[in-house]
Image 1 (tube, rainbow, N blue to C red):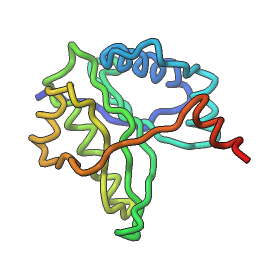
Image 2 (image 1 turned 180 degrees about the vertical axis):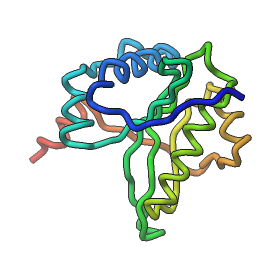
Image 3 (image 1 turned 90 degrees about the vertical axis):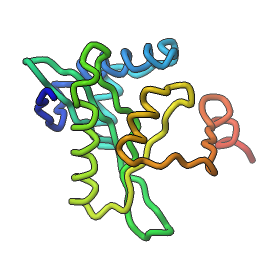
Length: 160
């Protein structure tokens, strides 16, 4: 198993982060949905600090990333970590980088007193599903994700 160096991203890493986000969107067949810009990422990640990014580096290049933020469980009465994106470059998969990123996130969750680490996975992404199950992750079959965005979000916000 190859060894990756993991580190928290800095503002200087914004171009790399955006590139990885675009590559993830391509993999998920949604490249046309990326509207993030370097300026937006710089503002939301490093000024407003809405999320954090771990980078995995090997052989002097970035091979993957994990973007996460805190959630909260009222049932546990504790914070959690929600993993928004986990991505390893296709030619770097199978080398343990994804597991290293998840292991580090689990450590961060424990260090910060979090009660859980959660994420979503596309139902067609069988390689990722198999990987997550190999780590002992449980699929939440009884939960369905709902989303308001764009015009529907604005319509609800502006409703009298």
